[in-house]
Image (cartoon, rainbow, N blue to C red; front, side, top):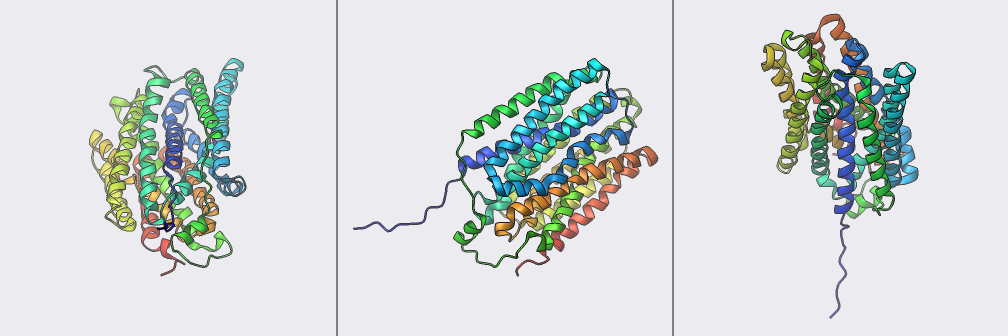
Length: 412
């Protein structure tokens, strides 16, 4: 009796674990950077617009998403992971020693901080380019949105811990000063480089997206270039607007506390500690969202979360004092699943163009670099309430993309 060979589906469990660890690091670094706004504003005596340059320096690096995606096509997923971790780790170490040198030379420490964080961000952009498509292709296409949401849930664990890291490791109950930064950042740099070194010796699977689609029984003709897919460009704009939503809340929170007389003197440390509730809400929402996606279509879930998130922001404007603060923080629960669902809609039916499309869509992250200083200038000119109203514009576009824009040019 002969055994009939059967097709074996690859086991991507270990590879997914590695990518989930990278997602954790991406979330920690990104949220830590945003959580430094209140710290820097106090330490360097900045205006609201100047404080938002922390976002500009970090998220401006996403302009390089497309070149980095092209690089990923040449050196592969693993090579990009290693390079991204190396660049981020070196950036942290330069930050640590650069700040110490600037303090000793009485130079502009804030400029040194921004420049080195931009280098860290370049590494994060590479990691971001790898993480999203890798999660999408490490398994069956129909479970792509589930894996993306689960990876973002684990990412949210890091985003919840990052503000606590700023509060209890960097600030430590003291007045914010630049000299508090070098030690913790040196530790982060060493930790990142250790992960990089471990990855060098790990064997990760090579992924062929077009072949994977064929093996799954999906047969379609692909266009000659990723630039011919409208839903990719519209998805990049949706991510652009989403960054205004996700980063807009923690960026505006310090100014809401500053406007409250009882917190005006120590608004930086108070606002930073409260950010853990926002990112914690996103963590809970992503774990819940991963379970809900098993029963509901991604578009319906995204539409519901957009509406509920906008409602929370509206309540934060209407309700007074701490009640309004908690309403704003509650928006994180509904922002939680937006990134993976928008990304999933933007990567539909792309096959061999998946890597390049990731670069295009990730370029939308510069929304945080451009929209946050704009909102900061609105705070300086008209107050935090008017600036917060900008979020409704961002919600409206994402809702349109979810239900109409993401369907343009797709097969019926």
